[in-house]
Image 1: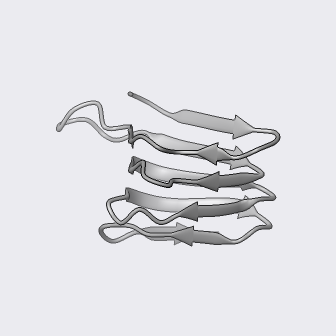
Image 2: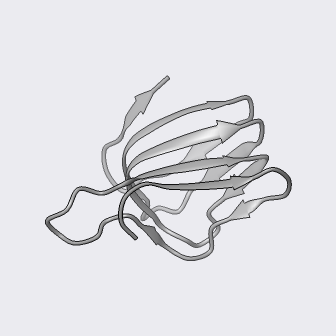
Length: 92
């Protein structure tokens, strides 16, 4: 995928079971991913994005060790668990 992607679920869980790769090629800048839901988890799918925005009242469980995100930001009242393979910047 190229560019920015937003996934929203007004009810239920956003389950990421396959990779979301926002890097169109080795020379391109990765896009940004917004997840907005009542519950979000990446059970087996790896997230590869420049930025990750978390929105919603649910819990975010994003703990696949191979996740690669440069910047994480959000506005959520639930818990956030995130694992990344390298350095990450956190914005409030």
